[in-house]
Image (tube, rainbow, N blue to C red; front, side, top):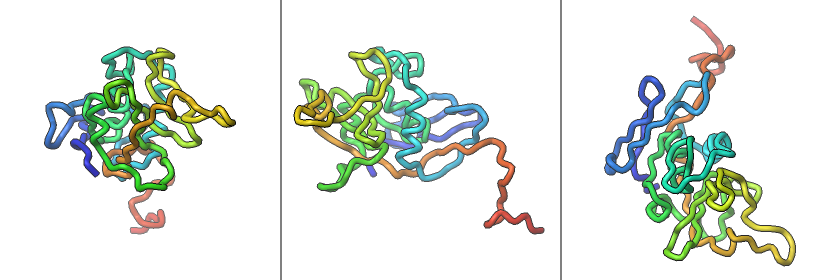
Length: 195
């Protein structure tokens, strides 16, 4: 799907880049929550949305790339890196990754939405479903959820007035997380522990 590289989790929960643009894609991040184990899996949009929601309220800072403070593209890059999917650093560069949904397709959770800011794609958000996005907002100074559109006759928002592109990266091979302890876990299909 045009992903820049693939990240893998090392022992200790660090994410390391692999792929053609390794120098640009190196991201180090902790496991998303304690008590989970990373597994190679197909990452779905709702997996990314669930991870993104954990950062609600994190402060905005231009150039921010960690949970101490994010800018819009740093936030998106960090969240996708948690799932083993490497992205370039800026919104402008990220707009070249993935595929545009087919005409007439609805937005899907995990889609990347790009907004005009005077020089092309200058802002990025993750679509979370229900006409809502999650993003690092420079005006609200934090990671927050906003409506893409508003209902009614005058339903224009900053976002739907400036939306210039949608890119779909998911589903994509990457990393998901499962509980570290599962009482009903079995390697045998169907769960039967037969020897």
